[in-house]
Image (cartoon, rainbow, N blue to C red; front, side, top):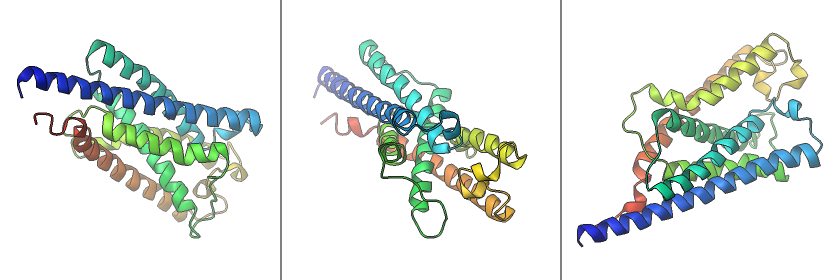
Length: 233
């Protein structure tokens, strides 16, 4: 196969990859935004009250990022270029890690070991807890351009969103700005649970968050090139 043929084949697969990612991002944004709107306008949920939940905040964050990347994919196709930077990569990685943690916490919450009972039956619950996380993970792993080898502590940057959320919630409930009855998760109920339980849960989430950030980064480096496998044959 000559170079022109290889280049043509590469270009074709590149366009398919970007179209696929654009569709995934649009579906993610639609699923997330519609779930938020359904919760507020159909279930009549108080928007500010729902912002106590990481799932709600994470869905809004991921939906915005996904919508932006849908347009970025279109731009990349039109301009035949790859737009990326370390900060942009970390933003997408943070979104993917957030959604994985949401999915992990929901699955763990369905077990008899914890008092939380996550919603996966209603339209908002199913989209926020299942659809958005899965679509986000597929989009990131298979479509984002890798940025090279990360240093050992750099995967912590994938926990940025979780860190901001945890910091705000710990302040609000730790200093009783919000009452314990409003705690969205049992480990934030400092009045009725052992401090060791709360610290253990937060520590576990961070260990999982870092591990997942590292795993997603490694999977992205390996799987993002699958589109161009055997391109020279």
